Image 1 (cartoon, rainbow, N blue to C red):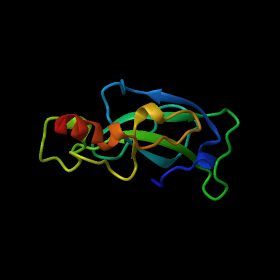
Image 2: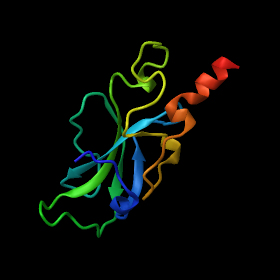
Image 3: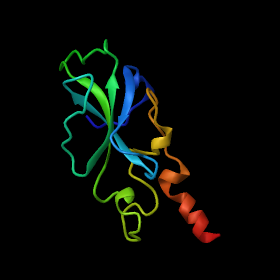
Image 4: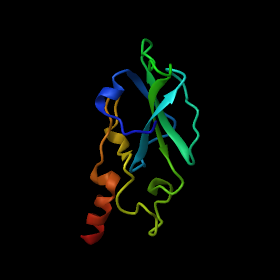
Length: 129
């Protein structure tokens, strides 16, 4: 599915499970995935690593057409800045992918947002000072 979530898409969320600390991550990618379960670690079939996922409420409804549940996953691809923080030639030295948000802005039912930290503009301002 992998569409950018809107607040209405997240109404059935009950919790966010982080598989690793997000303290040092400028951004994570988020995606809406169709899965067979409401809870538990979903199957991850992308390059890179799964950083977290959401669990749904016990009475969350499946999609009527497929019987699948829509849940968010949070992940990083191998070329993402948090994986290569000292690479001045990396593709996201400044900016971030479309689906990337600052993990500090993510909450249950809250899609998350880009911030100066996720866009690496804080590093540019510090370097030019």
